[in-house]
Amino acid sequence: MTEENIINVEQVDAGYGAFPILENVSFTVQRSEVFAILGGSGCGKSTLLKHMIGLNPPLGGQILIMGDRIFGGTAEERERAMRHFGVTYQSGALFGSMTLLENVCLPLEVFTDLPRDARLLVASMKLDLVGLKNFASYFPADISGGMKKRAAIARALALDPKILFLDEPSAGLDPITAAELDRLILRLRDTQGITFVVVTHELASLFAIADRCIMLDKPTRGILVEGRPADLRDHPPCAAVRAFFNRELPHE
Image 1 (cartoon, rainbow, N blue to C red):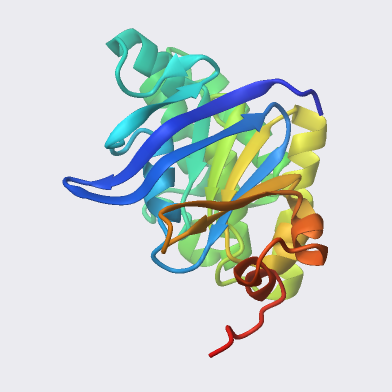
Image 2 (tube, rainbow, N blue to C red):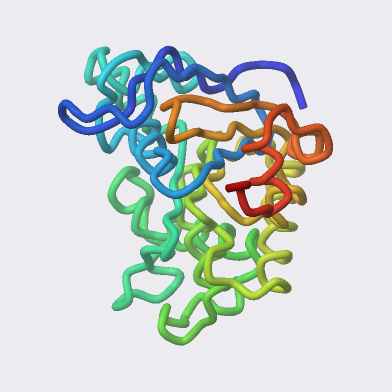
């Protein structure tokens, strides 16, 4: 893993309208690492993710993806920033009326001029990358939850992004399927050099895949702690971090 920042979040105020949820948040994500965003319910994880992927502008500060601003720059800069990454959502968000191959083809149809045969070939290669090549003709309703997550990753990879944002990838999966998904994330990081930003509350997956993490804190509206997950678990700097990483009930 090279120590090169691929994402810069600089003094970001996250929230909606006049209601900040996070204030003055700054961190970096390095190339080819798995970076996790943690925290309790209502701390701003999903809001921060929406800012980072360009769905909603932050209330302040800026976010740079490979040096390009998501907000505050030119339309061309924003387009470049958006092309650097892919996104998968908690539900997978596959189109139920399309086969897996058609789902993966969709970004290629919208954003490239590739002929149909080339689109199908690329989509088949992406499904093969996540272990679903033999399920190309299946519909989302015909496959398991874990397979839907992998198919969503294949679609997010269609345009060869450098970064993947994953929103609660292990949510709703049994432990074995979640472990298989963890191995896929690490394999894509190691073989494809992909940088992952993962929003999660699943501690088993966190310890298995994350190189670094930040823990957001609702009371202080900021980052409570940043570091390697195992270090934070074994040497928590405060009671709140110890409780989170060791699944302890807070003291009365």
